[in-house]
Image (cartoon, protein in one colour):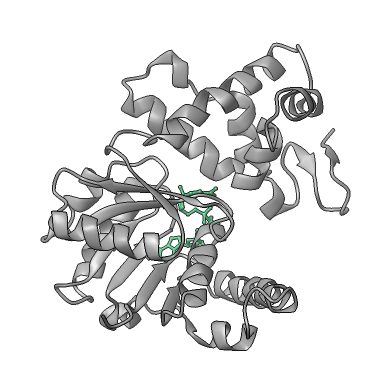
Length: 290
Ligand code: NAI
């Protein structure tokens, strides 16, 4: 079978990681973002990561891999893609608009996938004239390192789309799990109380960020504490996901968002990507932000 041409829309943390996986797996990749700086940053960080992988002998040539990726600001460059994976902001109206535009560019056989963490795939698909080709393919951060990928068919998704998408991602040595199109799917739903309770413990003045993280990692056996993990994911992205899941479950208080996270997000304290979140990263020293 001919190697699929893979399009990735959005060159942020997730899009760059997905482009890396596909290029390592020898696909031609088109990585598109409206923002020139985002593309430049993605190129710089991918070059660095791939050189490190070459040094460690995990890939034979970083140049070969990076040369398979075309960086572009033009969505029309997706015209020859067999699949486009969208990883832009977590906003249903924006995603719907983008999917409608994508349909006018790609061929009838092209699969359109969303990496959304929480939005309804059925609602995204409803913006398309061929909703049967739309599916959720949800990677975890950092995408090249995390083995799990949730495959989320909407009610409109065809068997063919589901099977082709799953086969492709299985071929990328990921562990795929088929999930229902429900808010947060599996992992992000289970994770909401993990973040939410940690934020409530902090807001009730019971412990600070570092103490809660320490308890969860040193005593609880978690790889990362909730605040370290939220800083890794991005407080903007994580807060939006909580808001979406809360509303989608008819305002069930179990998923209630936190003002602390909202204020961090509004202040631009997104976490690692902005240099400050619950911890300070700017000085190169990880420490609780005052
Ligand atoms: P990010 O903020 O790092 O990157 C988003 C990128 O999309 C930015 O470079 C932005 O310029 C670009 N963009 C925004 N609107 C666009 C448009 N209309 N056309 C083209 N490019 C556009 O976000 P991140 O963290 O990469 O998340 C992206 C998606 O992946 C979201 O839906 C998020 O929920 C999901 N996700 C995020 C995870 C995380 O841990 N950060 C994990 C799994 C999924």
